[in-house]
Length: 329
Image 1 (tube, rainbow, N blue to C red):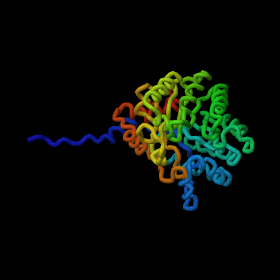
Image 2 (cartoon, rainbow, N blue to C red; image 1 turned 120 degrees about the horizontal axis):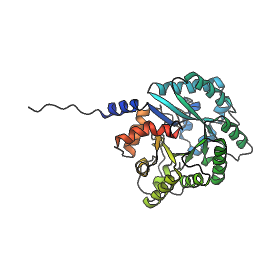
Image 3 (cartoon, helix red, strand yellow; image 1 turned 180 degrees about the vertical axis):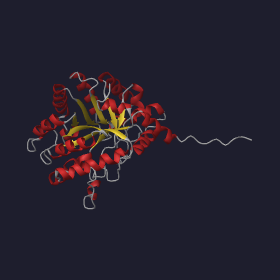
Image 4 (cartoon, helix red, strand yellow; image 1 turned 120 degrees about the vertical axis):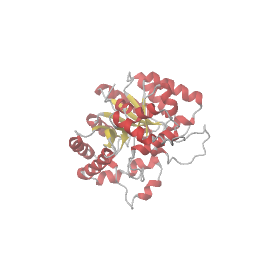
């Protein structure tokens, strides 16, 4: 009589292997704005992404250091409960919130220093050239505090190359890494990852720069994508995918190769490009339903990019993230 064979619980296997590698690494979040969703602001979640960068201005002005601190602690506790051991989070530093998020971030790092390694990045939602909002001044204040410099090319549409000149030039002078949001609109016209790779080489920042999202790369032809990956490889770019964050991408009439709205992880890793993952926004007007569930993000990534390479999935959840946050070589 043939013995009944138990099924292989692949989730338990992956979680055990992730724990062996030191635990989850969340490479990208915005924990200073976590848990700011209310019944009153929920309707703002339907607005365009480009509008949401400024819709948080009132929140930034009205938040105290203690309020920001409490939100950040709640997010860290949520991640600790899942076994996250390292986190990279953008924090707002601008004319509205001023240095309140910086002050809160210092307290949070002190509280959790024995539980989690936290790397902070400066978020410049007003770009670098908005004189009315003293954007450059607040960027420089944020850059002094940040462990890693953050970039948002969409905030300076039409001046992306100049944005990168300032961002990469400042990072090189300070000896810091760069994480930059790129190719977020899921359209073939966007070529921000290509520009980021070119500028990385120009500034001699190979191996020190990370792209975030890169959704629009999927919308280009295979030949174009392979050309981008080859240049990324030359620039030693790394990348962060936030899988759940991009599932809600809006329907479009743009014609492009058929793809899921996710970083093209399945193609990138075959070029030897290190990829990590992040939860992005948590329970706010950007992502009202997101709970920073790391397993859910990994599951969405492996399904949307159709990756069944288990060692690669484990690396994406752990060791790649350590490299992306500058915690290992």
